[in-house]
Image (cartoon, rainbow over all chains, first blue to last red; front, side, top):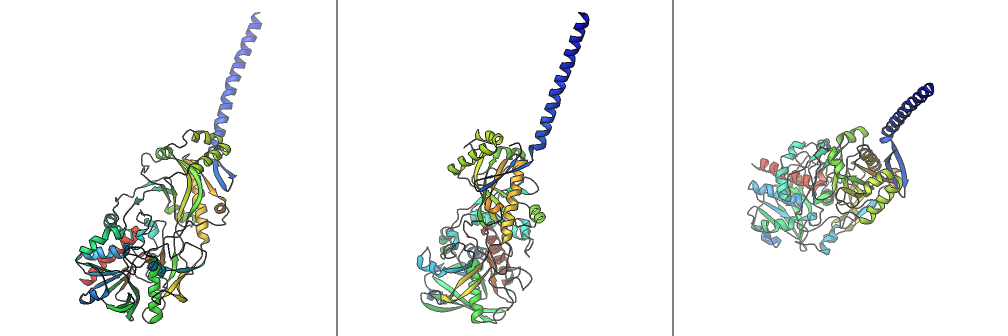
Length: 57
Length: 469
């Protein structure tokens, strides 16, 4: 039982660590990607005009 | 004093005769009056607008069609100030680089020009980035006829005669002795010491060309009279949306808030780095609701994140949303020129003018570059978004909204081959004939010309005073 508890707790800790770092990594890449794309030019033709927009607009 | 007919003039002697009663002519006269010098202003038109008088301005445009030159100027007391837009501002220092007159020489007359135009001497400029500045115009409601009719009637130094057309100058090389005038069907000859031609960006060339045709030796033959004619191309470059609060945040309190359109001008850096003309961007103060809604709808569709942010502020005071008007400098070209029509003549038998005019490809290139850079500035600083018209983006054409500024034809400079007057506005190789007005501008800048016309005319008044004393 003790062994099992130990394994369960270890798994939980590992799972939590992976979960938190996963969220951290995802958030970091998302923010990085957003700021990377923030000023990236995107041209869109609409009717008789060409809009000059940001990628994340 | 205002004379009713030419016979009344016989007993008077005027050391200076000014031809034309528009902002240029009246401003010169005001400066001469300040120096206690008597002058006579001769105006071809009547006290108010009349169709008959205006007909003498009929002209033909050969090449790219622009506004009819018969109606984009006024032949009456006060000249075109009777219908001008009123937007006033000194020219940018960097737009005077080809002028033999410095910014500081003109700036001496800024205060007095503001008084004549009844405007504040406030022309702030806020740097948005290295390519753009927010700029400030002043709006003048002065009509020279209304402001100065009573004043001239009472003046001891300024005299005026209306309905009198100066047809040509009479004299020998280097010296003008008199002018030939036509008044109520009669021809008169009027002598004077100094003559100042101030009849606008078309008529100044016309009178000189007609004088030259009658007396080929009167002026230096090399002078490019009528050539290098320019205007300010004025058109819609695109549309867009600007958040004033975001712009204000970026300008850290230096945002210029005032009634009227939002004005942004290209900087010296943009002009030099890209080898383009300078230009100004205007967003109107009267929003077009239909267009406003269309722009918001477009943005919600193609830029949902930005669209949502903007939609909350729709029709609020913070948003400028609508057409983007452009007012550009035009490159001087020898081929854009005023010539006399070989056949058509006005009621005094003086040839009417033909204008050879072709829009410059550089104008289109400049419009595209300025708009693209402005669009990039807006999205990078997140102060707005801009769309270019396809025609401009593809460098096909711009659709002129009218040609109301007539510039060049008697440009100033040091070189006789590409200029007509010297830095004192005296015609090259002549002793007593001066020209003032937008016809002497060697380059146009993007700024509306009247403010500079008045500065130049006041400066000319001072110069005449120096010569006479």
